[in-house]
Length: 260
Image (cartoon, rainbow, N blue to C red; front, side):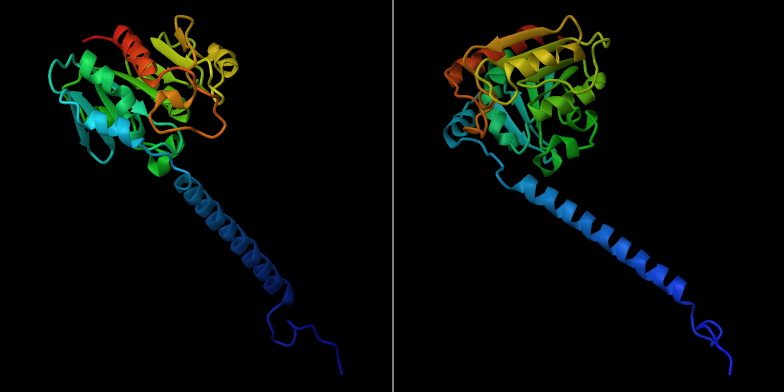
């Protein structure tokens, strides 16, 4: 009688079977992690989304000088008369609905004839929206000069799209990519009471912007003062009147945005 191994007896070798089982376990584990990651992002993007305050939004919708069109990709705010051919693509902050900025930007549209396209980012997070600037500028074909801007995380995304625009506007935000040598006209609007994009964070990121950048700090404005969606966790306490903040924003945009 002679000793035999499993392979000598005609069975499958044990080592390859063991390796296949380990590989299946690894691939299964990785697949589960991917599913959990995607599910986590989806849940995070939909929980705690901040919508527009009812009264300011209703007042904006009732304004006869303001036309509001929802195109799916973005909300187009255009003046019913006196359009200048100037435009601003505005990217909302993280988990803030596009409607939350209509009332804030209404003065700019009605008073100064500037068309504004408020984007509707995928998953309510600008970083997950790969669409180019042209996706939004095409919604207002009569506009001939375009600035891109955004609030908070939306401003960080705007910096990434700035090379395709005529100017950049940061609303309580700053760039994560280097535009210091771009020569691009840049306007930075911030608030002295901002608890998220704090004055120190704005100052620390100045080096990413051209030396000609115009910095305007609005006294008493908080992070949420740059929209009309209510208070925001982690923010400072605003002491500035919302109407005054809207007026300053409109005034600064009117004097800064490139003309045709």
